[in-house]
Image 1: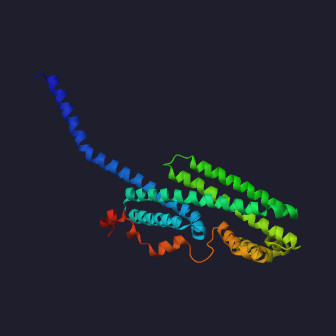
Image 2 (image 1 turned 180 degrees about the vertical axis):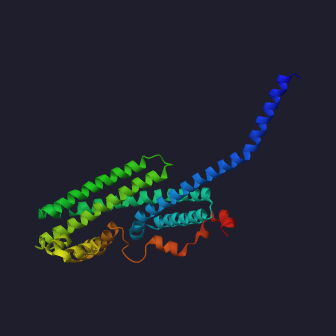
Image 3 (image 1 turned 90 degrees about the vertical axis):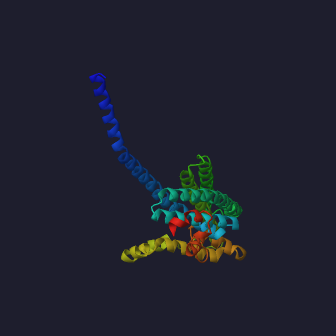
Length: 294
C-alpha cells in the first residue's frame, strides 16, 4: 500500500475517533438544551394560565352552567397536575397538561363570552326606551358607551375565533380582551339604569364618589381618594342598585354588578372550591404519572 494511502487512512481514523469521543458530550448538550426549552415553555404556560383563570373564574362562579363548571373543574385540575409535574422537573409532561387545560379553557371562554355578550345586549336594549324618555344626558352617554363596548367585544371574539386553532394562548388572550370589554358594556347598562332612575326621582344631583372627593379639602381629600378608591366606587354603585332597581330584578342587577368587577356574588369562587379539594387523582391521566409523582 502506498505511503500516501496510509497517511490518508490514518487521518480518517483520527477524525472518526475524534467524532466518536465528542458524540456523548454533544448528545448531553443537546438534551440539556432541549430540557431548558421545555422548561421555558412550561413556565410561560403556567404563568399564562394564571391570567386566563382569573378572568373566567367569576363568570363561571356567577353564571356558569353545570357543563361549564364540569369543564372548568377539569381545566383547573389539569393545571394543578401541570404544576406538580413542573416541580418534579418533568417539563415536557407539564407542558402537555398545560395545553390540555388551555384547550378546555377555550371552550369555556367561548360559551361564557356568548352569554356575556347576550346579557349586555339584553340589558342595553332594555333601558333604551326609558333612557330616551328621560332625555338624561348621562344615561344617553352610558347607553352609547355600552353599545360601543358590545360591538368591540364581538369583534374581539371574532378575531379570537379566526386565530389558528392550535395557537391556544393567542386565542385565549383575545378572548380575555373580549370578556373584559363585554363586562364593561354590562357595567354601562347598570349605570344607565341608575341614571334614568335618579333622573325620574329628581336625584340626578346626588353626589357620586368623585363629587365627594371634590368637596373634601387638603389631606382629607387625598386620604379619601387613596382609601380604596375602587371599592368606594363599587359600593356606591351597589347602594344605588339597591335603591333604584325594581325589586323583582334587584338580585339580577346585583349579580351583574359584581360580575362586571370580576367578583363572586356570594361565597368563594368556583376556582377556590376546586383548589381546596385538589382531587387530581380523579383525572384518568393522573394514573400515567402516578409512579413518578408518588
